[in-house]
Length: 209
Image (tube, rainbow, N blue to C red; front, side):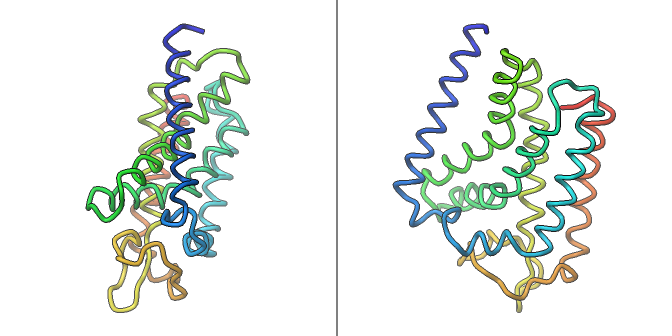
């Protein structure tokens, strides 16, 4: 492995350990550690759409012509994206609005990069013994999917406000019992179409990310 990649691994591994340390130290104030977030993310319509998206990625992966994609990285990257992207996008937005500390944004960025890039890189290093040539292009392609997914699963309907992104609310993350998918369907369709197009484009027409 080239010296550059060894240094790169050390840098992102250090960032991940620093983020983990901050997460443990500040877990009482971090949305990702709150039960309300997990009740929010495990709403039936979010689980169902995740299952469809994840299964699609797994089915498509072996047929892309890209040897770096298989059942395993399709599964764990999809799962990490589902579990972290709504919180990460919200945390970065709210840190930008100075509603959260910058440490939360740092943790969110590391969660984003690990889900969309570093877990993929690590898996291929362990599987193939070398750093994937696609590591750089994958950052951008997978990040577009990550942000789109985070926005999609952040959609919510709130009585008196209508459809909004959950992270725009002052009490985010919260547990909203009144958020039927039928009320956000027309807002969700453009994001669903965008994610579907990106998956088809990157995997079918570009031979994988």
